[in-house]
Image 1 (cartoon, rainbow, N blue to C red):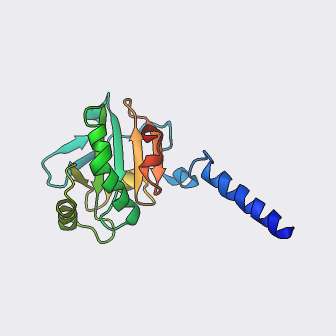
Image 2 (spheres, rainbow, N blue to C red):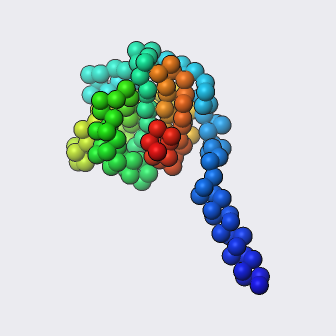
Image 3 (tube, rainbow, N blue to C red):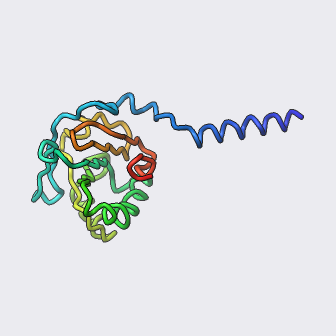
Length: 170
């Protein structure tokens, strides 16, 4: 009888976690919370040829993803991102900004090699050496993705567990 009760309690716990719509509590430690206006930022492409400023993207949604070449969740995200999402949203009103940076062992050369090795065609962006964008957003885990709406308001965020769980991609 005790085993049955334990199994039922465990099942209820697992199902409540799996089907919970609660936000990740780590979001509270980010600089911007859902519903808040995001300050302007600027980020350059890995090759330095393209610079994006949030203020110039008014009227577009902005998918801002902080990533690396070495984290397993980031690798899974980019496999999907390159093949599926950017192509599906290519003609939509969404600007994809996938930001690598000097996060742990990454550097520009490693990112270039990673992009070539995997045949990714999306434009990679690179944070400054002092991680100014990472710091501005208060990123605490990688990957972290922010979805900023057309008015510059944070619409959704996902810390570490993959952007596919964000409302836009459901």
